Length: 309
Image (cartoon, rainbow, N blue to C red; front, side, top):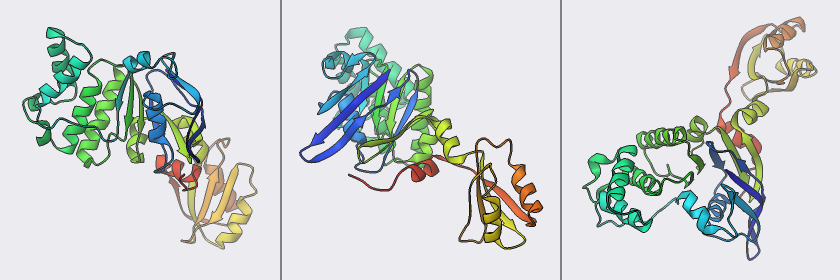
């Protein structure tokens, strides 16, 4: 549904996005992750045809952003990290205004406004002024606005930014519902725990360059392997690390600051039990052992260097 080919944007002597190649399947929720200044917003603006690439291109639903901007805009719903609102309008008037801009007329316009209000759970706010809405409600109104013309693709730049925990959960559940309706969603965010709970694929960008793009479970397994273990042994932990690191299913073994033995197990290992068995055979009885869970924050920290453009 979305494919970029060597997408590049240069501002004077700064390369904001360099040779970006990503592919997003129809119906995916794709988390676009990167530190501030990495190129996320620039990429989304190019996909939304609001900014021309310096070189390369992208296709949305088979339409080229360079030559078919009108067709692309009919296909997408774009929500920037900050969008303008007409504060002196009521919620229903705000949506009717944008429906009119899409040339949706008469009964169809009223029906669509009613539908998107119901979908975003804003029906009871329809007669309130936009300026009276909370930040979370305004974000939901922004989503309602981009859904007016029933786009197949949603480009959402930091939709959960500035929201309280309850509002973030509500936005997350709404996006899951939109995925169930068949929407393809590209969402950028710095709240990695939120993305980890709703995305099935991710892209990590740093200094304008793609670090990883693909299935979330795949990258989780690459980072985790078969498992990450923290072990306390009866004996010298450094000697235990030196001994176990030579095992063919161990990819890393080191001593932590807390004096524990950290062991990363290869994804090719049949199970994790061999670690304790091997250590005992080597003369290091196990006092305690726990497995560490890997989340999206771990993936991000291990794949990036912590630099910005």
